[in-house]
Every structure is written in C-alpha cells, then in structure tokens.
Image (cartoon, rainbow, N blue to C red; front, top):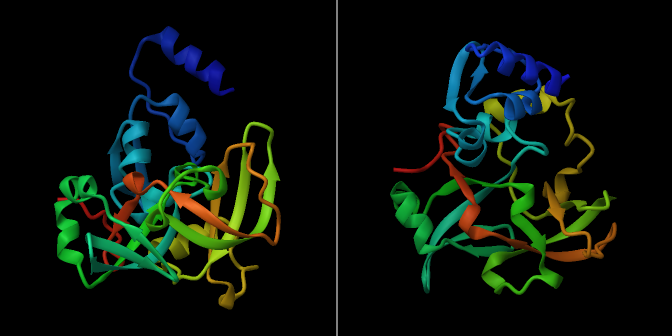
Length: 225
C-alpha cells in the first residue's frame, strides 16, 4: 500500500498531506515529516533529519524501530578530556562531538540522557575498539534475522524517566515491564550476522561514540549549541 499510495501521489504531481501513526510510512513516503505530540509539532524536517538529529527525547524514541536506547550518564573530567560514566563503564567524548555540540561542555559534573541507536553498536569481540568505547552487559535475548542479529542486553545504569518516556512506554504496551529493577537498563542492538552472542552471555558492546546523542534529562531537549 505504501508503494501504491506513493505512485498515486507522484502521478498527481501535487502537494499532499498524509497523516499517519505509522512512522515507517512517514519515513518512507514523505519528503518532509512533522512529528506531533499532543497537537504540537516537535520537529519538522526531512525523515533523515528527524532520525539523525532529533530535537528531543520524544522524537528520538518515536522515530526509529527499535526506539533509541537511553541511559543516564555522568559527564566528568578525565585524563584526556570529558568522558561519560555509565554504570561500571566509561565512554570517551570525542573532540569532534564537543565541536559539534559546544553546549555539552557546560554539563561537566552533571548528568545527561545518553542516546544510542541500535545500529551504532557492534559485538566488541569482532570489532577492534579501545576500552573507552565499550560497555559491558548481559544478553537476555537474541533474534537471528539472517542479515543481522538483534541482541537484547542489560547493563548497570539508571533508566531515563521523563514524561515523554512514560508516554511512549505506555503506548508501546510497557515493553520494559518484564525487566527486573536490579537488572539495570535494557538496550537493543543490531549486530552483524557473524556475531555469536547467545542468551545469558556476559558480553562487551562496542559503541560508536561519534554517533551518540545527548539530551538534557530535565527538559528532554537535545544538547547542541
């Protein structure tokens, strides 16, 4: 139906407003998309803009499947500059990120909401990355899809809880209700099919720190300029 409707729109050669609750339709059919919450536009731009540079936590988790992974992280001064402390792991903040998001420097000594897309992680056992780009976790479920493996894992950390995350979790049917409080934070990653991770494994996950997203946990807004 998406292909048929797109063909009709192109044949009419006229501006078309399409309203949908299906983000896949919005991403694949629209030249520009507006993400609304309670009747208010939270972001307006191309589908790529909304996916790659979300304005806030609501857009970050609403656009994309699976939703963007979130966790609270402390920004601290390290030996080589600012770094993120997440549970028992430490992640570097590249200088390129600080150049692109100068406001992030003002969060030194504070907490931020850290966001990572599922495709921006990899099985550290088959990826050559330094320790400051890894988090340690425990696999709770794997889904082999042939072209990729979807890995669900938990790791020590504090869950991000805002009005937006509550709303999205409620609309999603409370997906995280089966995760015990002492298990930490649940994330989902998309790995290459050569990964051999299995349920129950203690693993290390490589994070592409160049593509990490940062949000203010109080306002839910993206930290940029």
